[in-house]
Length: 381
Ligand SMILES: *Cc1c(COP(=O)(O)O)cnc(C)c1O
Image 1 (tube, rainbow, N blue to C red):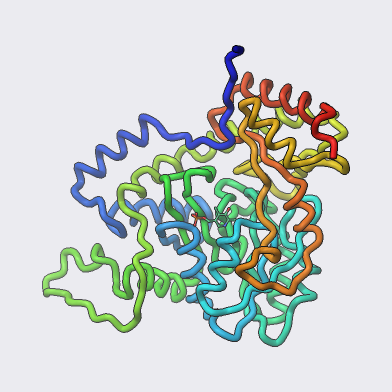
Image 2 (spheres, rainbow, N blue to C red; image 1 turned 135 degrees about the vertical axis):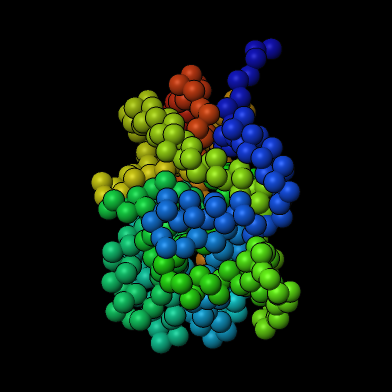
């Protein structure tokens, strides 16, 4: 039997430098969360994304939940949410008791369509959550104008967009608050993790308090002359990143430009080697923004059976999956919205291997398999 080459769909890029950082944080004696390494990482992360404040969190879902609470979303409120996303976005709205109202997306880049969002504003609407789709930022100028017109807040789900830019500004600085993910499938990772970033000191202070059971983090009481016994006036959560994870993230953040460059090279090679295939379309990157390539999504054309393509790629050792989810069709939301564009992308998009460890050979292998599979009769619907 012929050796089957395997190319993973996603892969973290962690190694010796991260291990060295782990040695240091272990030696420091502070491995729980919200400690000195988190504080240092937060300063570095805020500087990288161009906001006044950053708060490290256990994941992006907890960062979104904190954001919605400090923005004041609650029962009776409606929050307009980009439909095409990993459903953490809609779930976080549900956790507050508010109602997610799903807006359809642009057919080219899959981010929230500002006109679709505008049509959903009611007197109960309190804010908008845009999603930077697999990293590419949404239309923040148009969304800001819409939010300002109706007195709404704007939240950026930047789970996938570390390293991206919009009109020269970094992802994370494009809305009132933004939430990042450091899950193993994202562009920079500590296995699990996240961050909330923003400029508003009061909101960020409240988020910090809520993320550690409703009191100031222990690190802020260190060195006090008196015994500082905090009192609890709100039932906060444990949404802390650990200092072990923060140590990994400090290294990942330093490496971010190189990791984005490596993924961009793979994306360019995909485009070069697949651009002439009629059965699929390539991802679109708009001129005024940059793509950090958390995922590389192709769109199957008419008559191409997307599910059969994904299974055929996997059989040949090429990692593949759907693009992401259409939210309004998920039973949990009981949504009455119609988002035909997102529904179509949910049916037709699929992901090719994309991570910073891909070699030129890996990409060539993947594109030869895609050509064979998509060009083959077996996948025609
Ligand atoms: C991955 C992802 C999330 C969830 O991130 P976690 O860190 O796993 O909570 C949220 N939104 C989007 C768009 C994502 O891709």
